[in-house]
Amino acid sequence: MLKSEDFGLKYYVKFLSMHSVQLINAAIISSTLMLLSALTLNASSYDISLFYDHFSIPSQADEIQGDVIHNNRVVYTALRHRKVDLALHLNELQSIETGGHLYMPLFHDAVFIGKVDSITHGNNVHSMRGRLKDSDTGFFFLSFNAGMALASIEIPAHNQEFSVVYVPTFESHIVFEVDMERKDVLPEGPVLTPLEE
Image (cartoon, one colour):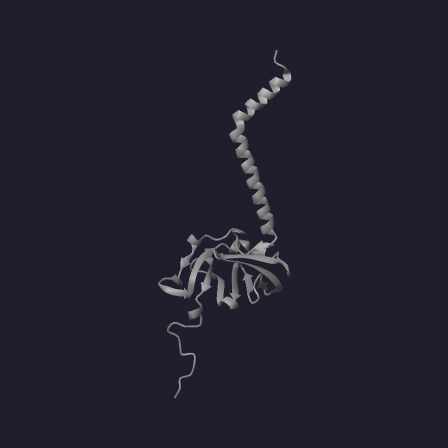
């Protein structure tokens, strides 16, 4: 006669054999969710992200190489650029305080964390300045008003500079890496130094 303990054990073994795949998948999903939760908590220690896509790292596929061009005219001299979602995020940016950290995923290989040193308000303009973490010379400036923002991120030690601007013709903000060799060159502009007589 089959004992109740034996029946229970056989039923349990049969249950495991029938549902092993589902149980493994559930364990994998649970582990993944725990990992994502840990990553989110780690990312949130940066207080807030500069862009609306929060803490995701930009894809290289989204980058456009070269100048920012509109109607066959160079709008900004750049090494590369991409559109960013920022306008809907400006209210959240106002919540950051002095000493807070700003996560700045500019490009796939240019991701920075800035510590806010000062914040100013005036004439409906919200501005903040700070230094880049893990950089002795890097700094950033961010100013925004009425749904438009202007930002500059500079790393003098590497001769690098990035800008975030609103381009009305694109109806979007863009981030671009400044072409330092052409930064101060004005196409078809006047001579900036007096000619020798």
